[in-house]
Amino acid sequence: MLRIDKYLADCGLGTRSEVKKYIKSKQITVNGEVVAKPELKIDENADEVCFKGHPITYEKYVYYLLHKPAGCVTAKQDNVHKTVMEYFSEDVLAKDIAPVGRLDLDTEGLLLFTNDGPLTHHLLSPTHHIPKTYYAVLDKEVPTSAVEQFKEGVDIGDDKPTLPAELVILPIETDEDGNVFYSAELTIHEGRFHQVKRMFEAVGCTVTYLKRLSMGALTLGDLPKGEYRKLTEEEVATLQK
Image (tube, rainbow, N blue to C red):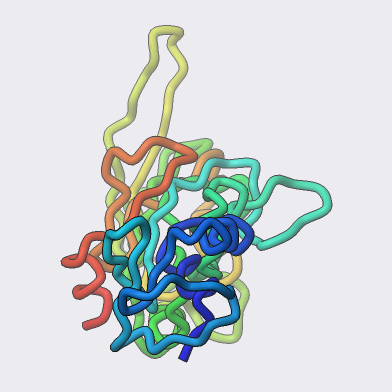
């Protein structure tokens, strides 16, 4: 059983204060009867809830993908930096979403958000080895020997070497000003502290730009920086597998 105001907020109809206004103006019905109080308890699996005569579908769990920009922290609150939560609208935040894992302050790219606790635990569990692919720009050319080193696991100063990772060294690029760029894509299967940066440091390179391109079956695609989208049913089903 859920309070009707929480139910409406979870459905994305608005914030708790907004849905209370809808209730007060008699725009919400349950099983054909006008709702008078926001504390009314309903059965989200059986009762028919309507807004202005239109049925509302309840979603227990929601899933969003954000293209995180650099310069914001993966946290719900921070006294210094902007947080990733500030990119979401109030109706999405009302669903009590949280980031799955984290990206560093200066790292961009794919970041998943959900209120599905069991799935979050599954994705973050070190026993499941969810692959994550990053695009990195380096201060110098990556030695070709790093491909085999990363495949075997690298000593980054922890108790154990990293799990085997897949490194693809990309062609060297030069911009119109003659600046040379060295880059690579790296797929890891764990989530240690600053892992990607430390792995490249282990082969003598410093990461100057880092962006997460994918996590499991999810890909960033052409989602603009600072924007988010809801996952498709197919993407959710793939994650839940």
